[in-house]
Length: 592
Image (cartoon, rainbow, N blue to C red; front, side, top):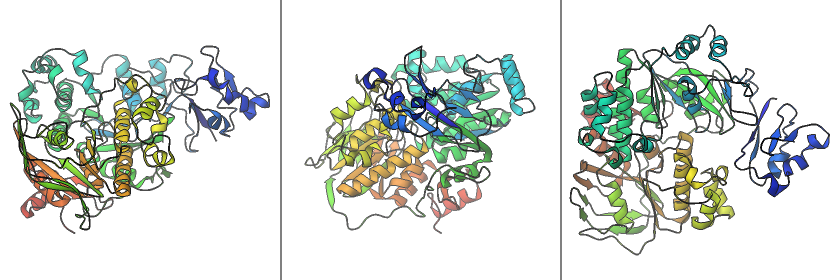
């Protein structure tokens, strides 16, 4: 069996362990050059041809820097790209269909961004030969007879126009200065600026400086700036982070408008409901994070998402997950025999340009309450009042409870590693309970030696949420814990939160916009409505179904259940099912 040896050089500290991996390697002791010392950086290099896969070096490495991955037997072809010896490998490339939106669905760290870099010309694929720089002529020859041959030929000759929306939109103000209107006018090559501004609801931002915008506003502006360009191919990386449900579906509309002009779109998205509504086809990707990634065959969007949820790819005969993801046929009902942790009266908070009114409610043990509604409607203000960060102008909150609070935007200016951060701030770090209930589901062991200041958005999100739910608290307040997480991570986080809430008879209030995540985790829900950035009103925590019907009726969106997996799916506006559900007042889904 072929295998990949992964060595994370940032973690490897051979002087501190005296090259334990080399000392204990059976191959080295039998005088085979299974592990040698690199002349360049004096760190180990593992021969994948001689490695037997015994795993001794993995177990002996105290820094978790080594991983030996056995590749599936089906992977007999050469990789599309490899970053170096003992580094990540990518197998396969997606199909780009003219006039269609193709989605990439899979975990973080398995090559989706590498694919975008290759297709945009930032990386020339080396087909596994990382020691020599490849040429576009070799790439064109490699893909001879396929759709990608002509694509790479045009790309190498600069005959393709490409528009690219990056993942980390919060970096936009660092590279672009000035007002929003100036940016959008400068990129409006399709003369669609007015239409896009209206659909993405950007009118109120036009005269504002980019540096003064929220994450959701920056996301919509990044989408607008990308699709306003006159391009042949559009590559869009995670367009829904920080967006509310209506804004996500508005983004779906403007992205799908590109296909009416026969333009091609490749999108990376982790919100299953949005990906479903946006894409015509999907490629499911699987592999090992940081080790290798495989692009599966092209599938219709419904078939592809269901295959991902079921964890089995029929055509390839590959199981990508031990268990399928299971959704409730109906939302969880309100728990009856549940003691009250705290309650609050009607309360009100007024700022210069915004005011929030909240109906009285109670928070019960062993329940997860989700809060949803448009951006700028007061959800974060509610969280801060409940957490004691902000005082209400009228009304009161029971103050004899402990609240652990994770804000929406996370600062990463901590100087030190993730392990240092956990030692300082995580309750119970290092215990068996912490390792089982938090470290494992949040995949913290994979990032222990990374500097906190250099974590990706998803890694930082996992760390912040994990530290929050490790605290001794009566209520965990989590503001958008799914931002930048992939589908697998979102559902792992959901399970971990529910487990801790049930284990300790506590409660969690979660502000989020991912309908699939909300459906998966909620016991009850709160609806925020009103006029964004002006006036907000919050209901008490109520039954999830009632809350969803209230919220979705306000934004005029209906959902149905997929018959195979029971996952929530968006109905197309004015479709038969959309009209039927609206007539019956069942916006969430019809009763069976």
